[in-house]
Length: 541
Image 1 (cartoon, rainbow, N blue to C red):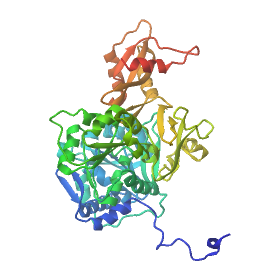
Image 2 (image 1 turned 45 degrees about the vertical axis):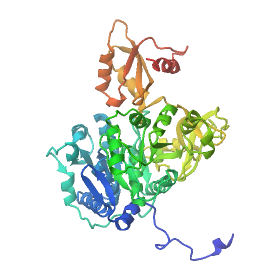
Image 3 (image 1 turned 180 degrees about the horizontal axis):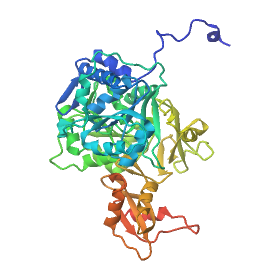
C-alpha cells in the first residue's frame, strides 16, 4: 500500500489547493506590476492597475446586464482595447468567452449565435451591419449588442446600441471577480472554421489555458516584461492564449487593428515590441515591405509562426532582418500552439539552406503537453524515418474539453485516448514531426482554414456549372488561395469573373476562389475527381 495510503491529513484544502486559471495572473499583476504599462492601442495606454480596474468594471457591468455564471458572452472585434479587456472581463464575471471571426458571413454568424446562445455580444462598429442581419435572422433569443466604437481608427458609434465605454461606467472598478471553483470549468468557446460543414464549438477549460501561459514562455525564451504585439487575431484560439499570458510576465500587449508591415515595424521601433505571432503571410509581408514601411531597430524580435508550413526561403530572408522565427503547430482544439520546432545547436554548423529547412519542420511537444506523435491507422507509432506517413495525435492538459453540443464528434476526436488532428505527417529520427498533407483537402489562406467542400458547394449552386473541384493554389501573399476547376453544363456559359462574383455573394471573401479554370475534370473509373492532378495545374495557373 505504501506510506502515503496510510497517512492521514494529506487532503486538499484552501491553503494548499487553488484551481488553476489565467485570471489569477491579472489579479497578481494588478499589485506586483501596478504602474507598469499593460495595454497600448493608439493613444490608449493603461497600467496594470488601470487595466485591472477596467476589466473589473466590464465584469460587473455584464453582471448588471443579466449575465450569469456559465452564460456565453460573444465578441466580434479586431485586436483593440475592448477585445484585450474582454479576455479577462468576460470570465471574471463567470461567463464563457466566445470570440468570433470578424470575417464570417451572415448565415454562419446566425448559426454561431443560435448554437452558442450568447447573452451579450460586443461588436466593433465596422462589423455592426452583418451582426444586426444575423440577429434579425435568428429563431432563438438574440444576444444584446454592445457597440464598440474605435475612434482611433475613425469608427464612431451608430447610436443604435449601448456603447462599450458607456457600459464600463456602469461597472464597479472594485467589484470582486468570480473565480472558478473547479479548474475544469469552461473558460472559452471557440468555433472552428467549418472545414467539414458547420463550424464546431471548441470548449476550453481554465486549467488548459493556465498551463498554456506557463509553457509558452519556456518555449519562447521569455523573460520579464516583454512587449507583445497582438498580430494573431484574438478570435483565433484566443490569440494563442498570449493575452492571458502577458500579466504573468508583467508584459505589455500592443493592440493592432489592421495588420501591415508598417504597423509591425512601427510597433517594434516605437513601442519596443519584442515578440509577436503570425501566419507565414505575415513573414512575407515583413520581408517584402517597401522602403518607406521599414524602420530600424537594435534588438532581436522573437516570432512564432503557424497556420501553414513557412517556406524555407522566407525563413532565411526574415532571419537576416533581425527576426528569429520559431515555427509552432496546433489547432483550435489545442488552444493554439502545442508543438514547437525546437532548435538543436548542432544544426548551427549546417548550411543556411539546410538550417531553414529544419526550421520549417513542425517539431515536438511543448512543455504543457504529455505527448504528441504520429500514428498509423491502427493507432500505432509510425517509423521515425522521415518517409512513413501517419496522423498527428496528441495528449495533454492543453486539449479541449470537447465539442459543444456534439458528443459524437467529441468521442471520435478522442478515440484511443488521444486527440486526433487529422493532419498527415512524417516523423524524423529525432522525433520532429513534419506535415505532409491535409486529410480533408483544407486550404490554409492567411492562417485561416477554408473547406474545399464548402467552396465547391457554393460554386455548384451556379446555374451554368455541371461539376467543380477546388484545390489550393500557392500564393505569395496569402500562402494559399482557393483555385476552382469548373465543367459547365452543355449549352451554358459563364466567365471567370461571373463565377467569382457568384461565390463571393454566398461566402466570406477569403473563401472565394481567386482563379476559375474551365476544363474537363480528371476522374477515376468510378467517377472520383483526381485532385492531385488539379493541384499540379493550379501551381502554375
